[in-house]
Length: 312
Length: 312
Figure (cartoon, each protein chain N blue to C red):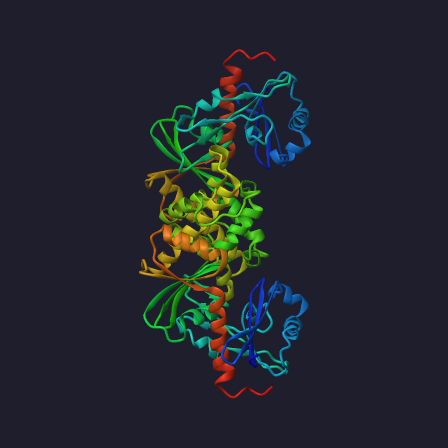
């Protein structure tokens, strides 16, 4: 077995993923848990990390590179933001070392857009972007990164020029759990992007995004008047929110792109691929899990492997 | 004191309002409570009504006219829907008598729009419309009725030709209570339509409604980056949702109206008046409380006062 060289951690609000990596950035071991920032803020970040490090038998001198909400103000150590427009590689320079730990643990910063009319922040996605595009991509790219707070990012010659967050995932979650629409989706089964209600909703919402809060109500009225079933109602809500997001992402970018770079995996990958296809938008998918690991690898290469290590 | 002639009841999802009326449609007594459909479905509609009738010493032979969710499938007695396009007065013909009651109690139907692409329903607002515009209005009117599920209604020569619901009030409620935005608005104080954050958000969202789920995220990022306070965050969220609704209502109507008929009262009246003014839209406000009472009065006149009563 190859020798471990560093630990990579993607530490989100509600999820924790850790990889034991060798010097050629190959995965030697992996850990996944629900001990995200919210949990770790109560149980202790150091303790959560050490438990997982012990589980993969990580040597005491292995350095750790972390991205995500662990660097938020409410996280472990605040890692601040790099201000956009900024080269993606600038996040490497903004890594913050966790004080009081004998192990070399660094947390990468997020990216902030401070424009008065469109303030926005990302934390974790900058590392995915770095992994997805590399530190020296050329030309323009419009990147869609679906999630709880989806990001649409304009990158030009490996610089983040602007971006916008859309609360697609979280709005879907709160309206299906806490609004009158919870009755419409009660008992819904799994659906995918081929569901006709999803397809139709994507097209409708993208064409008429001003109707967003009206179109979601049709999940209920469609049930009352047309016998729309719970799965169809859920598919309609999902398609409506994703369709409106795509229209918004393209609107914010100021142009209809030749190609959308989709950074996604799992269920969201299928839904967004289906939605982009329904809208006639060409796309190229980059696996989100791989992207974040590649971004963390680039950081590890830069911070730990190419340079003399900072002594504790 | 004038003699009581009938009882008018506006029975919504979460609210109950009752008026003891004389034969000239003047209010003799009023009751308000939180015993809406949700509560009454558990404690019993008949019992809730009788308690309030006793409180205003209503005679045993006084008839009762009811509008709102008491006529929903989950309500007291299902009163069905009149299908749009329909004359407003058609709701009078659709009144359903509550069986098994010695008192003459009628519940007005809602209005349904069965179009495959825009199914929609209203229940209670049809009575407000009848009261606001009267049964024989002429010309075109675009009516905005703000609320949990705001309605934008096209009326032409006293016929409802089309309408759209917008979940403005409920989306505001669930995102400020259950999403990450609850932190942004924690401790927010009361604001009105003159708040700069409200005004700016109305204009921005109406101009770029495709950005809705992105603009709401700026309540959080504005706080992280610009020191936006909780009240400003709440005002921004409210303005964003109302601005997008107005853009959507006008989009759905297919025309920029010369005049918006706003049927509102209380806090929502002020916010919507401020929002319409910020967008340079002329409006005329009709008090929503008065409108529903006038609608119920029109129904009572037609059903109880102008005709022989239906024997029990």
